[in-house]
Image 1: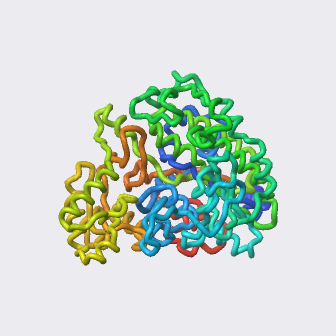
Image 2 (image 1 turned 45 degrees about the vertical axis):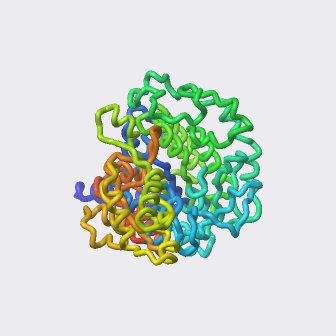
Image 3 (image 1 turned 135 degrees about the horizontal axis):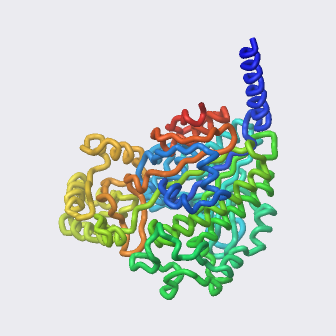
Length: 544
């Protein structure tokens, strides 16, 4: 009897604790916060983990949160606009229409930027940087569905230095999206959302916080000799974003004050500034304070600018993540105070990874190389003119695809199939290229199944090219300094995904999941409809 009584008592106590936790957190979270770290490879969670602080963000996420260790991007090209769209739509470029940061639009007959919109005007500056909207994205986001479900009582806000990093995650029905105008040093929006800046953005802009950061400059957070996970600074294959004379730490940015507002993006201060604006949005919009769940989508653009310039093995990137660890810890603490622990659902992920700098790889006897896409396009056009007698048969080589000039081909009655055959033959002889094939015959092409599926998921006829080419592993399109991303390889497609907060139990899983599973997982947790182009699935380890 005593044993049974103790068992019932323990059960009753555990039930009451669980019930109290559920009551404290509510049946739904007050706020969903998505943080996309632009160009964060999965291994950055652990590469510098011995230096992440106990009160920092990454260690808290990995100890208190749940990490999906094998999260992959399910399409190519693995670039910023596609990544942000896929995370929040639960879809792929073949459906949501965001097939690159830019693409050649066959119907419009021109190259289009992913968020360009000439029908709207800039709000917050006199430049054209605000002529942007989400209209080029065909499907809804999880924020759109949240707004629909609550009869538009939920608030949805997007924030990023990059316009596409703010606009595409926020979606079509967002209350606002705010991005950085590098010409003025102010945060702006467009008339798609509203005709004036809210007071909290105006107040933030008046601080001219960018000049404060320039005054501080960029020195390493810790003694530079302690950066053991990185190569020495000043390598020939690193870029020089602050001028040829600025080739190493510490960087003095005082001369940039009031003159060059764009360079802040190539420093960790860009992350700090973005998260400070996110805090201002939380208080200014009273996010998480209403009777319906709100959503804040934040993207940190600076890691991408820093990574492109210096490469993932640089001191600059290591310092970026050590500083981000501190900023992230501060931001999570702010959420605790503003919304309350257990009252918000937080996830961290990335839009893509990054390749190692080819120069670094070669210096360490590892295979790598570069591909001159502009030079190759010129050579292709020269060859095709000799064979077919027409100029400019190739329009662009965006997104690792060759786009033919169909107007010229049709006007002089050339055989498109013959041209494609010549293009494939030419590209196949290039040292950097592994495969080249007719995109319209993708399903009949003998290709490794994962790669074939990723390319298929990225293909939309009106916004994709005629010939696809794939580079060898660790080959990039670019010059002798810096690096990039965009292909199927794990360094580009293996990204972090860590959840924390409302109804999240600590742990990790190595089961494979995909970027497109994030939105349907949130939809399942909130018990709302998933986005209308969604092809992902709820992650069982999260919703169990």
